[in-house]
Length: 87
Image 1 (cartoon, one colour):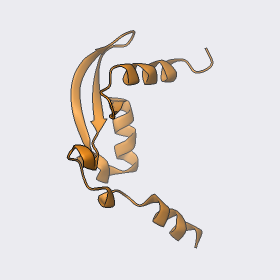
Image 2 (cartoon, one colour; image 1 turned 180 degrees about the horizontal axis):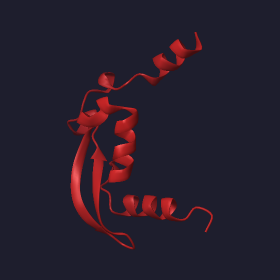
Image 3 (cartoon, helix red, strand yellow; image 1 turned 60 degrees about the vertical axis):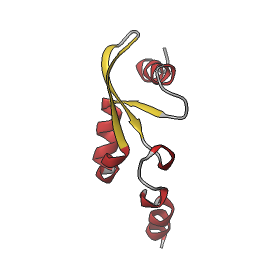
Image 4 (cartoon, helix red, strand yellow; image 1 turned 90 degrees about the horizontal axis):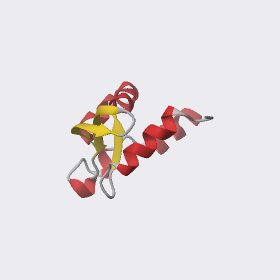
């Protein structure tokens, strides 16, 4: 298969998620925190769940302002960072 495990895992995250939530694996959480450690307060553990074809995985949700997470203006401003880098 051209895409393999990554596409299968993404599909399982979507089918086991909750409406309006960004659901991701522990590996994705670790990658996010290496790049943006300030995002840790935006992440909520869903705990271990059984994922078809994968077994038990620790999964997480990304919180938003609507569900009690950080306010949007506290998020890193990628537009400002890109503009500063271009200057």
